[in-house]
Image 1 (tube, rainbow over the protein chains, first blue to last red):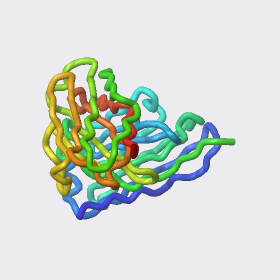
Image 2 (image 1 turned 180 degrees about the vertical axis):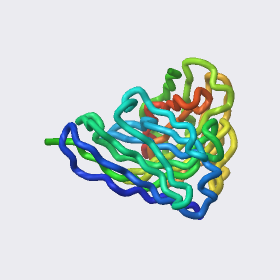
Image 3 (image 1 turned 30 degrees about the horizontal axis):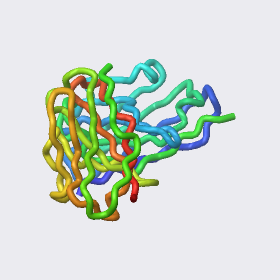
Image 4 (image 1 turned 120 degrees about the vertical axis):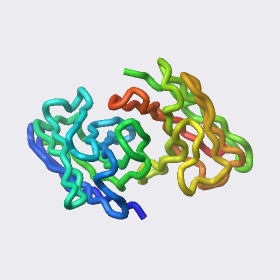
Length: 120
Length: 108
């Protein structure tokens, strides 16, 4: 059974930094692209970033480009999101999601999410 | 960016009845369209991908149709556990994946 478990969400001040992680199990991790999707309180879903299975290709939404960095460690089945220069509008639940296969495929499994709150 | 527009925003249906949810893309996404269900306090769950393929473990009462710019999610006979928010998402224009704003399916 595929399981994704996010961690690292916290209360941080504007301008601060945070690192989110997603531990994956029950899958051949390196065979799947992975993404981060966020959901602001009471709002819809917003794609944030994607990384290919090998980690060699990364993609970002314009709203986070230059501030967030996605990475993965295939030896540890872990996905990461380094977030810098955080803003109030980054406040959201962050979900990691597995792709069916490569980047041009649907998100078939999601973690339970981790809450990031940016506030002074 | 491809804009996904869902309608209606809220749909009120009685248990046992059929529900039809719509999703429109601002330009063609072929069949690269997924539907998700989200209940309060839970992560989204994949229901349908490739516009009409049910994901693993999804009951047959859920069906998807459409291609290009017009898509439909149909729930043939609503069960109590089906009342939730539903999102469509296109992955044709990857990596600029975009979601619809959601349709809330509520009990009538």
